[in-house]
Image (cartoon, rainbow, N blue to C red; front, top):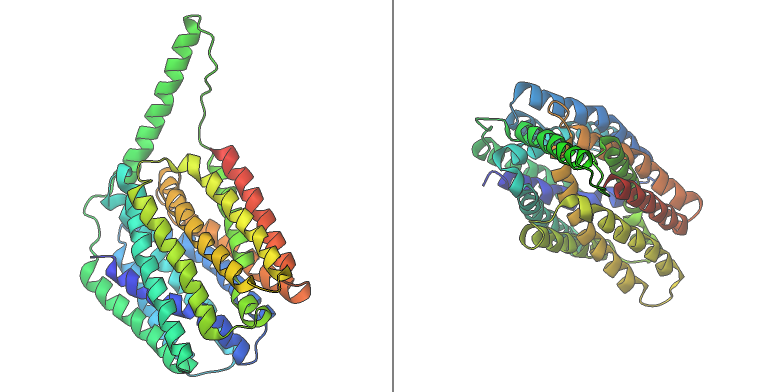
Length: 395
């Protein structure tokens, strides 16, 4: 039940994810404005993510930071309804992004501390699937509101109201864990296991056995590099993508919401499979394959720009499969991050995602505006391949 506030929050941001870039264009902004806004927001959310993660681990209070995030989002989204100035909207969005980051690290720690390591993949998948359903409902709300010609102001007010409801629900339902030891226990187990394996290999060598075995320890730096590259590729691709559908494929705003709803459906299916069928699988062996698959899908977007018929159908299918792949990637990397990242640095996962996203959110719109969307898809695909190499080395 403690997840219900996050469900409402994701409904609001699912609706906002498509509404806001189209709104910026509608009030006289450009693709470059969107890129600059998103890039600055993500750059500033990097130290914010680290700060919120440090504070929640330092104080061992997680609920208060979740409440800060939801309440501040509700207030700032309400302020959006009072202006159509592109500059002021950008400032408000950047401020909201900094405060919005306050709930990410506490949410990850709550899952890690409330459940045992054996249940992390399953629990992260259930959480992400539940909240992705909220995101999907938000997209469907956007589709309906755009279809009936409802303006941006009442839609933004709805986003604000949903975040206020998320704040109230979280205030009632979330409780900080009484004991916080699961991540420390997992770290101890990994150290003991590594030492034990080393002793076994050493004893076999001393007994004269010829071994092909290697003592391998996971490399946190390579894992971090893979996260940054994956986030960079995702942001390059997805930041200008709503405008690609709206302008290049000449479809309505309601149809853009519908397409992204299918992307979200793919994510829900991915989370469902991760929780039911892949719950016992180790994320190490699956991450690199998922990243490679997503990279191939990015390259397929290039074919859409060359097609004269069925281009919308193909683009929608690619976007749906991308949602599925992202769901698997997120579940596995969140679980791995809780193993690898030490206490006091739980915000590092969001810092790395934000670092790649900050660069990509400017690069994507800039490439689209200056050179066209083919270069967006090509660059994103190449970044996914580099991320694949990093995770392949890591595993």
